[in-house]
Length: 96
Length: 488
Image (cartoon, rainbow over all chains, first blue to last red; front, side, top):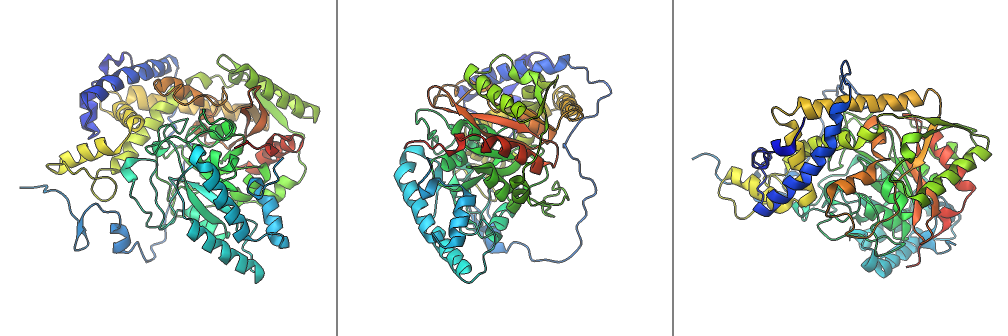
């Protein structure tokens, strides 16, 4: 966990499906470099034998009764869709 | 002194409503007029619906007249941070991404407030998707601090804190991921409570970092915080991390005299970077508790200095995962320029998100990406275990911890916006509470020479909100900071 020289911002932005302008690329790379320098101090902590914490109070086996109940009506679920037709969300063509 | 109706605490207004001295419609109208008068300069609200609020107030008056009052909050206008869903109302998260979004359902906290008779009043500004400490990262412009309009209200629940301080809502709900209720409460001179992780349902809260997010109240008094917490707390089957625990009568318990308590002073919270006026006010508060017979002990939370690093890895990772849902397909901003489905994601996200959200999505994607996961994310989760252990270790000796909420009072707009790391360091005293899942409260404990509020943070044990509120109230009752109001 060393240098932020590792931060290939184009690769990461592709993974995040996020288009960046050249100006954003340069600015974020330098700002995140500073943040990564700060978090680099975590490498000095001895974590051998320490279990990771995902949640402060882990809850396991949360079961819900299998009971039919009304869900969100289609009109409400589609209310915020940018484009819709016949109770479906319209999107650009995915396959040719 | 707070004599105007719109500045009075919820408990007092509730008694006035019960006695018939005022009606909910009168109160609602006073608050609407107040918002009209001061919000053009404070800008706490993203939107509000006065007609609907007055209709709810009329319904409340009818309930009271018929002897069917739903509870102490019946007829009181409570503001909601614009990330908490209220059916039929906008939910923007202060982002262009959700500029036109209307909530199709109620969050659990909103439906509980409604069941308690409260009026869901307005949509309060925040840092976009709750990412920030100043409310400057809002796509709709910053909120101003009611005590000094050239300064920030803190964040991310800056609109909630400013609205309560300015008399624009009797109380408000915020969300706290790294300090986002407590820090703005401190900077605006109000009370802010972050409950134990799992006590309040997150169903209907636009997610930022799911293992850290909690909804909680911002109020004028500790008793008011207890009243609102009592209405919103409790198990919810629709949030799988919601904990099955009994909800005590917080307001009843907080009115009883408690203590003396054993209070810990974590030495790591009083080091470099702490403003001398803030330090002096907190020292005075500690002296107060000592004079009341509390045992004051220095304790150590040795992993404190790693908190910011751990937080910004974990919160960014969870943010990048949670915000993947904003892809321009089912809801939210959709780019008009897209040529195909994948291009739609890239452009919609680029156009919809602001700079801080993009930075955190990039950082989070990076720390989760192949080859870096173990070094960053897994290691941060392990150090999180150590931070949590530090607190639990301290609680073997003490009942609660006393610290500053924010190292500095309200800063000027623009002062930190160019340097993300400097902004992140504002959360140094609040972040550990979220990482460890503990309850924390900020309450007013003084003012700087230039008239800016100072916040005292008390950190409690898991699910012991009643005790935490009692400790806070014992300080509040002996001081009058909470009765001061800004001149607007």
